[in-house]
Length: 343
Image (tube, rainbow, N blue to C red; front, side, top):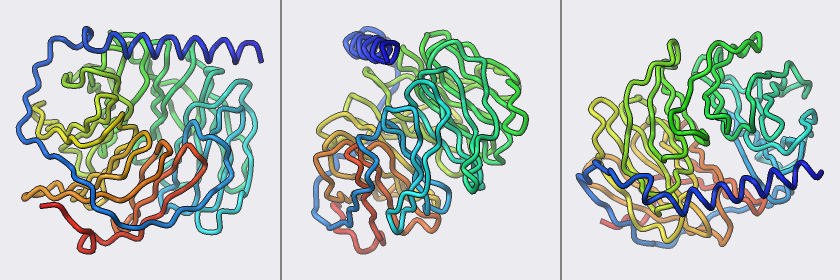
């Protein structure tokens, strides 16, 4: 318990320091805004269900959105049926609080990681632990599978990105961050590239097979909460404490668009599977859904006063789920044509 409390305050102090230093860390901003879109609020209704997790620290939906995994800052991961809101299991095995959860692309495996610097892989059906992956020397903040589910990437405070064989648990390689603590990452749709964010708030692309750095994206002056790839792998979106979402062109590295209008930190961002929409939200904020094709159109789905930790579209891009840290899940049966767009 003492170790957990100490780790909490250590991370809090580090985070506050990074936020305070954010502007000076990124004073060499070279990104240029090509188009800026201001998102204006328009009311629509949602269905919200309390799922009983307690205050969420991390959340993930399985590929068909029927299950949600949540970590509340304790040492367990709770599984819940999304439709009935019934808890179906508790996964126990970590010795320190859990910070990150991720489902495999087939939904059969769940990965969890946290303050104990280990990754646990779980069989979702039997709820049994499959294996434990050890190698990191400090806590782990983020996890992501490759699309084929064979490789798992992990972001750690030990200044590395771990690349793991999901079947054997063997660490394939460790990618060293040139800027310390790695706190966010995403894997490209072709499974060949990992994007990661370190303490300098630059987004780096690295080749998974070799660890070679491919590109660096600079544009956020403050802490980046999440980074995601578009379904076709051509673009990338990043959500930040600077109240913006930035859309990047991966081929040449330029900033396509900076989405403004969020009144506070943007914590979650997600592309729709058809690649036409980008959803984003944050701390006590509404959910902003932005059309990515010209002309730019924006829709605002009324949220709550809670922080939204995770956003996920359904496979047909017609529904949107939002996991709040208040233990509620918002579910939107959303057809783009029905939204009151702000032209």
